[in-house]
Image 1 (tube, rainbow, N blue to C red):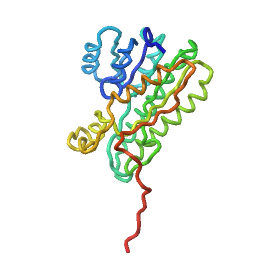
Image 2: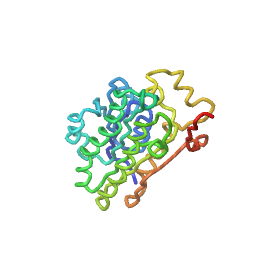
Image 3: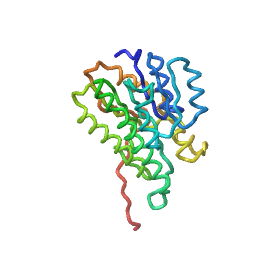
Image 4: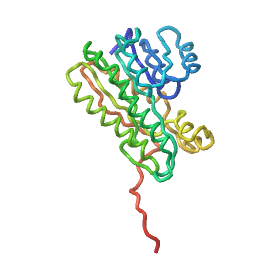
Length: 252
């Protein structure tokens, strides 16, 4: 598919996978509408991209602001929706984890994604054309210690994507869930509340994926012929794999 003349809405566009994806889609001729809370970051990206880039400063956790997106002049013919906004917070076990962190992850990774999708999809169905791409995670499939709520939110994204595909079959609207493993972005810096040293240790001694790697997969999915739907892409760095089952044994 040719992206020239199409409009793409990208959430989480100020950094990481969202920024890389917006840049890649713009390079291929799309008009990109960039959504994030960070005005300065968005202004910088719009300046770098030039024409065919529009910044919308809003918090995707604000239902009223998200609902208004459908009436924005630049989004009335939106063809691509990339739900890249998401985060992990903390790495404490369930008994010590922060409820505030849990609520923020659920509101951002689940509720905001659902609200953005609900605002945009009816118009796509009416026009019989569109593609929604959700950025999930392998954490939604493979649990790890202290991954509880983050992993659960990404399991939600996986299942929501597949249920959407069932509902939208035959409408001309496609749905893809891309589920990366370790990607070096601001992800770990956010998770560890700005502790750069701790974040850097996550990727020490191995080659993680990059935001551009994931943007390439988004481009692959959205540029397939209109009759082709890429349901799920699961991707990890070569250096990442699967651990053994956890067994806690009593002493003695």
